Image (cartoon, each protein chain N blue to C red):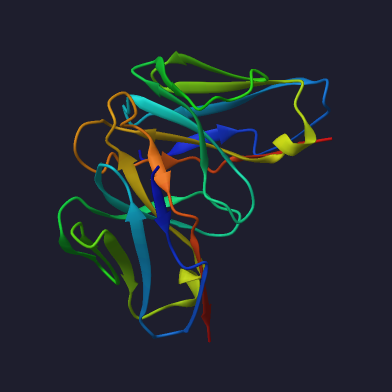
Length: 113
Length: 115
């Protein structure tokens, strides 16, 4: 089977840096994506790593190491509005199924003043 | 335009009712998705349409019936639902398969309550 593991909750203060880890067991996938979802809202795409290494998009960075079956999302200069759930997800590589995202259970980030 | 729209925003229905959820995108995406999401859980894939053909059905009960009238529209017909079907129903679209992110763009969802 395929599964992704993330911490269920993370708490941090404004201005801090937080790292949300995602470890996975999959038989083949195209890359690791991260989505953000605020309470009552819809998931929105944050970042994608198709290759090993670091991708940076403003205050957010994401990292992937296929050899370690591990990735993370790094959020810098935290703001109150970053309080949300963060999901890692991979796209299934199986023929006929490659539109399907396998989702982690999500990490609830609380940013305190 | 990077927006996926869904109607209605909220829906309350009895177990004997028939209702439909609607989704629309004008980004030229050729894949559209229905998800069900319960509180504090990840989205759970229900159906995928690729080039207007049903390509994935995640063994969803027949009381949920998807329809893709054209490349911009996606419907979900509901009939004889159960209270445990109460959830947020999300529609999404994406541009292409193959290698790459195939980023999914989500609509705001329909909050469904089954009484």
